[in-house]
Image (cartoon, rainbow, N blue to C red; front, side):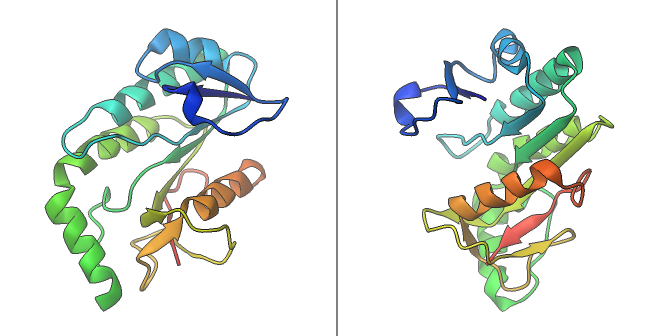
Length: 183
């Protein structure tokens, strides 16, 4: 297992099976090298700022190109709620959707471009659209909506998003889909 990270000192996990690779997903050569010998890619980017960016689409282009070159056939991509123009499913989600559309419009354009890039390929891809991320515990109790947003969902822990993505390693249930996830 290899994890490409901009700041290796930010990783506080120790596992003999994990290799930390200092690098940047916007570097095609770094991505190409890091995929050698692997069967699956997890892309869990997070931008440090709000506003227009090209981080997600650049990463998607580099990852998909490297996957094709290296013969990697499965991608798990962390996206954002709001990238598909979702509408509120009820009063509880109304505030989250309104804020996303108002405050994150420029921020959400690039993850949308990344999804457009990923969807060009027929190998096994899945992108997850979590609601607002928290630092809570993993519960494995959440709701999933393939279309729209989970009714009443406003947030989810990073731990539960990670658990959901890990479950997809051996499941085809959400291949070629972009499910939303929330409590």
